[in-house]
Length: 164
Picture 1 (cartoon, rainbow, N blue to C red):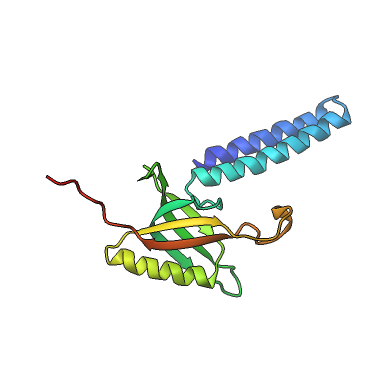
Picture 2: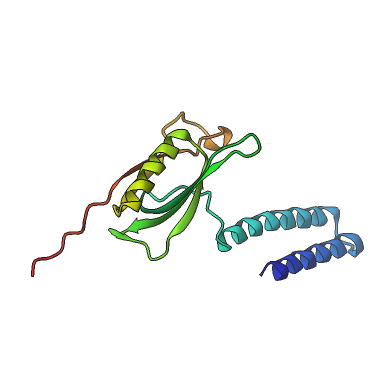
């Protein structure tokens, strides 16, 4: 699938190059074409990463079941990260398809996930909640780390079976 996508981007770039070099369009139209193509490229790249199964940088669902986690500790060359595989809880039931998420590395979350993984290995399912970390008001995209979340894990209660 990578080769067709690469060829499609190359064909788009070639078409834009022809339009910029040999058309008699006004300069503002050519500038608009360059801007639109650039925005399209970055948007398509982001969409393709989610389609190909890369972990999402989106916020975790408010309620979820933790299925697995991988902890990548930071080093001088890498920032590290926490990779979670979760099933969102929708209408009181886990979603049909799980989703992978990437969270920035935090030591407290590392410890919490380690405890949760130990319980999962023991057969105790883990129920999680997440909410945006409270912080200062204003535009969050201006503050680094403004998208952090408060994540909590607890044991999933055993299902109550009906009497026979």
